[in-house]
Length: 263
Length: 269
Image 1 (cartoon, chains in turn green, purple):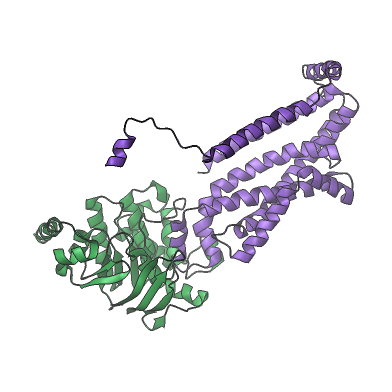
Image 2 (spheres, helix red, strand yellow):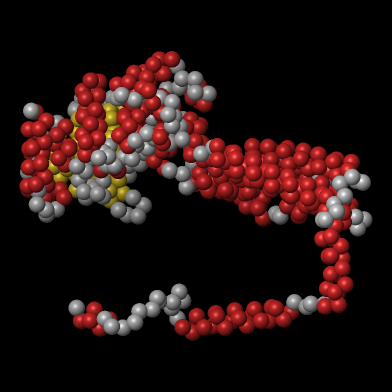
């Protein structure tokens, strides 16, 4: 469904953020992207919807080659890729409803959006999504009145109302407490399952990733270091990705979490 | 370790901004010498100051008994003209500055547009209001039209520059999130940029209205209409009491605008 071929990104400063990355994501698969800060995780997902322009290589979404699309065609393809951000990236001075409806901007004309007269079906869907994440009563609140977890739920609604085929998720839990982090991850994974969406989730928290995803890719210095199921993350593998550390504690924590989650 | 032990026990001083001592002292001594030379060239004619003190006293005393009545129709007319100039030039100036500000923000506009808009701003800012007003009075003749055009022109340079800087310093991620939804450029501006810069735009607009009103009092001195023309006439006739009345009215209006802008800015967050 999503295919990256020899994707390279070199920044103007000469830093090579991605070195010929090859990844293929099948329909409906939720994938976690782990790796130390500066490994190129954010760059990778931004190269997919071309918020960051890749230097070379190809990105295919289904049959469409995203790299090399004109700006108009790229906009139409961006509608199929919902994005969820670190620190939520809600437009703080707009209401919750406007933030959610902004996910429909790719589908409605300028004047409709300018006058905030979205099609009734969009408004209905927005309310359904807000209700699904438990925030329907907050629709008219301004985004900056919400707590972190609530804001990220709005961010999820904004991505889903695009009716995407793929979710690009950038550090969804970076500024949340451990409990909210789990709730958000669970919500994202449940929604992906309900809607048959594929997702790429950038995440720092290895244990959290292992709890929820089917596949993990480890990135190190812009290259794929590990690609496999979550239980393949042995201390040796983590050392290869992150460098030397005592990984036993991290992995043990996961085991506890697992038993806790299953019981 | 040995390097550290050599440092211990020694006093520490912040390294000077200019490293080379000869250059540092040259600059300091040179500046002081220039300052002394500069002050010595400003001549003070004490007998003239003494004569002028009396006129100054008269002027200031006039404020204790301002004369609103004997020239009331002139004052009223001038005031109406000033207010018309202020409102019209602010509306036109602000309407033109918004697109120019978008063009002059590097994170929103492509390079050629950016350069064009930045040069418009630079030209508008380089030409001081009085100079523009003298030129426009020469073209359009005496009266408020020249003043209106001058203030509109000055508003563009002021508002577009400051708004563009606010756009450039906006939160990139909020705008990025809107772009990721496949929004058109206009929609992106409307949803991702406009909400972020709106408080600043409103604050700056009110501030500019305030400035335009005060400027309209100055522009009258070069014949560009408004209350300034009335004020100028009053000075020419040595009617300090009328001049005082006009100045008091200007002060009251400016203070009222200041208060109003505070109220509005508190409302818009």
